Amino acid sequence: MEVELSGIVVDCIQGNIADQVGIDAIVNAANAMLRMGGGVAGAIHRAAGPGLEKECAPLAPIEPGEAVITSGHNLPNPHVIHCLGPIYGRDKPEGELLADCYRNALRLADSNGLSSIAFPSISTGAFGYPKEEATQVAFSTIQAAIPELQSVKLIRFVLYSEGDLAVHKRVMETVFG
Image (cartoon, rainbow, N blue to C red; front, side, top):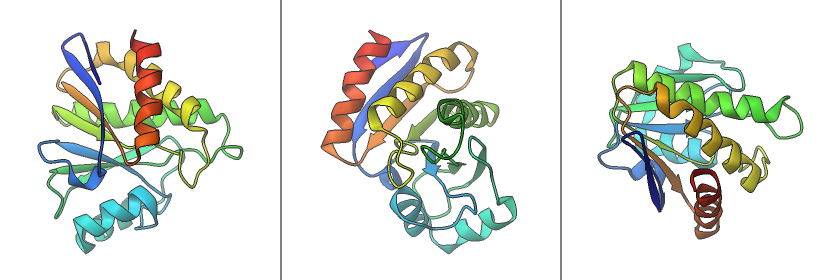
């Protein structure tokens, strides 16, 4: 499913975030120390190779809601934007911190002149954020940020499971009409 708003396409696909050919930056659902970890961070670090963790080391630690940018190393993408999402029930206010992740990643992409960015579902894995609620925050934040974007023309969500894709499609219809 895709929508177009002010010349910017927002779409959702099922796939592997570390295998997004033709996307300028993929977003890592990072841990505070920007290390390999599991889930999305593990997949991205494994695909990028050891150079990514080495480049990340001096940028860590980051706080919930913050984003930093690195090169993509062995990934098919020139850049990785690392965001630390909130741990649901612990990092408050969760919704604002999660929105900051999306806002800050989009600002970094735009300020670096990137035309495309791919997001995973931030904080919905080990960090326990309810998927439907997190997706609502993500799409509402993106909808509000679109008028400010200059270079970003494609915002993609890459969901690993069919169930996550279904949630994103349903919420996308609600938010974007």
